[in-house]
Structures are given as C-alpha cells and as structure tokens.
Length: 140
Picture (cartoon, rainbow, N blue to C red):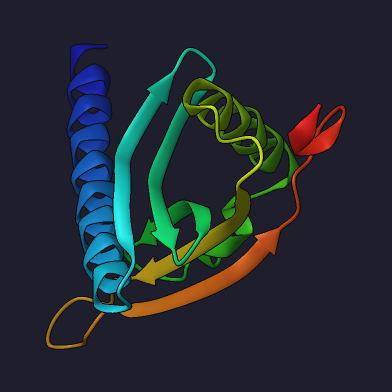
C-alpha cells in the first residue's frame, strides 16, 4: 500500500514538473510572438487556467498540454468537450471579475511533445482551438 502511494506521489510530481516545464515553454513562445502574459495558473473555485495572454486587443485563454511522448495520444486530444466547458466557465469568471465582458476573447491550445535526448520539443499552437461552450456561451 505505501509503495503504491509513493509511486503515485512520485508520478504526480513528475507530471507536475512536466506540465510546469511546458507552461514555461509556452509562455516564452507567446512572448516571442509579442504577446503579453496577463496571468499564469489563474485559480478560481471552478478550476484553473494555464495561461491568459493578450494578443493585440484580444484576451486569449491558453490551455497548455504537455506530453513526454505521443504514446498516449496527442496532447490536443486531451482538451475534450468537458474540459472546454470548464475552461469557458473559468474564462467567463475572469472576464466578469475584471469588467472585460465587452473585450474580444478566444481559446487557444498549445500542444508540446517532449521527445527527450537531443530532440527539440515539438510545439504546436492551435489558435481558435474551440468555441465557448456552456449555457449562454461566453456572454450570458
């Protein structure tokens, strides 16, 4: 039992550090594009948003998915409909909190596959990856 818990915690730490490394890489990539990072790991009672950035006059909610390989599918595939609904609700809360409901916004996904060794990470940026989902959409 204890060994199982130790392995679970160790695996969780590895996943957390993998995710943090991916988010750091994604933020650096967005800064290179000239975007401003407004928030990282924005926490709300409904959940968390990885990155919130500003692309010109658009607020962009960025979900970052990082994998150490493609054996469990592509990172983008992990942003399923339930995840999209959750992200939409948290994004709406963020916009409401700041009085920004009239601002243009969108949802992007950055997928990172770390191959290891001397291979550079494979970063894919999906702009407008999905539309807002949920009751009343973004502006209810």
